[in-house]
Structure formats: C-alpha cells, structure tokens
Image (tube, rainbow, N blue to C red; front, top):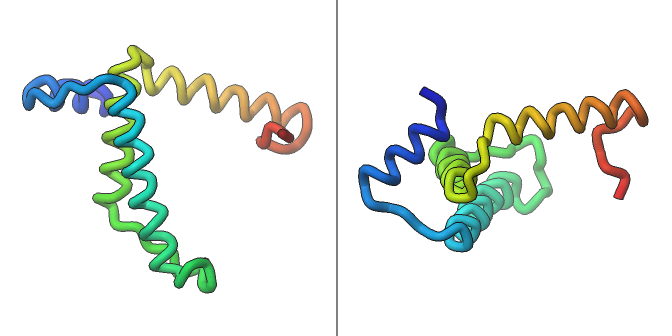
Length: 101
C-alpha cells in the first residue's frame, strides 16, 4: 500500500478531514518545524555539517504534504515522476536541474 493511500485512510478513519487551504497551512507549519531543527542544530548556519532533523519531524512534514495531495486529488507519486522527468530534461538541456529563474 502506498504512503498517500495510508495517509488518506488514516485521515478518514480518524475523522481528520480538512480543506486544502488548511492542509497547505499545516504543511508550511511542519516545514517550519523542520527549518527550526536545522537552524538550531547548525547554530543558525555556523556549522552546516551538524544538521540534525529528527525523523518524526520529517514524517510530520511528509504526512502533511501527502494529506494535501489527497485533498487536491493529486497523485503524489505521479507528481514526483513528472518533476523528476522535468529535472532530467533540464539537466540534459542545460547541465543544471535548476529552472534558472
């Protein structure tokens, strides 16, 4: 069973439905917590090699993003495949995965 289905089933089973706007806010909030962990573990960037983010914080962010995908009827795996193909094309064309913007 894929992760997005597991998240959707968990949300349904526990009556945790929320509109997409709230799912987005939750995703941003969880990413903020990941950022806080990076800031504190690296002494606000002075020791970038010391990055330490607890697994559960990354899990919270992933859960929130998968819940957002489900709420928007977006297949997360298909979206990832589309993005990987886009990056591969960019690398082939320009030697860089960035958009150049």
